[in-house]
Length: 529
Image 1: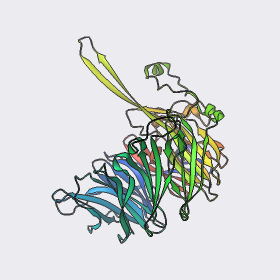
Image 2: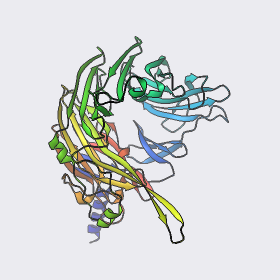
Image 3: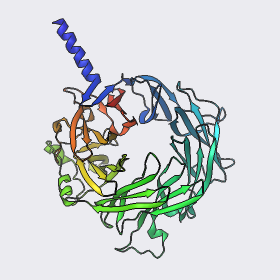
Image 4: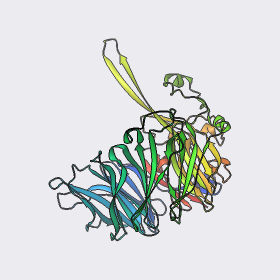
């Protein structure tokens, strides 16, 4: 009898720490005591372990071994002198080197400088600082903002500086391309053709040849004095600027979709940096509902648009997508404020989460419905005293996966039905994690266990993440959905509450995620084999 009990305990322990879903395996590391700093991102991995970033009263770097077990945590603090502390700006991992960027503003000279240095795999910050940019005659410390991205294939780091203190002048930015030894490759100021007051840079990237590609949104109504608001003109539009530092050439692409409004746009460059793909959504001018999808393919070398196509959503697809969630708690349903009234069979408030391109030059776009409601109630007691309370509702509903063929035609749209709503938590445990393997796209999310593995249009709402199952939906190359349970909900008490937003694919077959349980958290790794 004792042997049977020990055997059962061993089986239970193994089940809790290694969970299988066909060819996918999830392993958890040992728990770590929570601190005030909150894990926000996965930095990446090297041959010695994994690194994550935490924030709260400063930035922290935390390291775990290959078995997802905690090794150390380090608060990132950079000092120019004993009293002059720099402001943390960014951190990257490139070619097994961890590089920290920090800025310092000198109010006496109105100068702001950006410095870079290394942090070792043991968590030791190199005291030697390398100046990578400097700007003077600034109006304030917030006059310039920094960001960093990189192309590991050709060892290029793009330091992007955006100036926000001269709104009436032309929008401009400064780029500085360095390698992982802080040797400068190229740098220059680039000025756009629109005023800073009417332009908002929304995204940018660098390709393997160190060319810079920028996405920006322009308020045409303000930019063009003669542009009056009417049915055949748009007030806002998106553009892409490709800048080639080697030749100092510019190429601007107008992304407009007829008289429609672009309500979602993203950019993806293939692994060889030959083509740039620009997919997204468009809507009618006076409605927020998504009308259809668009995609453009641009040859980076020839600077030619290969194709540019758009297509309305099919009414049959919209009819399948539109469904109210199950809600067994009628009292709670009656107490909760009515959701914003929206027309049936329309797609609203979808945000692009991720996109991929495969070796066949087919593009997959993953999006999710998200919106927030703020409800303020006022109460007056018997003594005439008035008080108010505000509740923030965070809705993360259906996910949508869209595939475009090599010729730009939309092949299919698949909807993943889900319903998540929480209050006053920022949707911390809601939303989805996305990754891909062997041309199959995977989407994970916290799910009401009553939904099981069904993919019916109507789903039970997910409210409590630590009493939820971790669902995983695989989307095959033809759009077929298959739902599995990657981690079952606890039979009693609270289980591991995963945070899908934290999910990060760090290699072709490895995905890192985080789980919370009581006052502890742990890292998990999904092996895709």
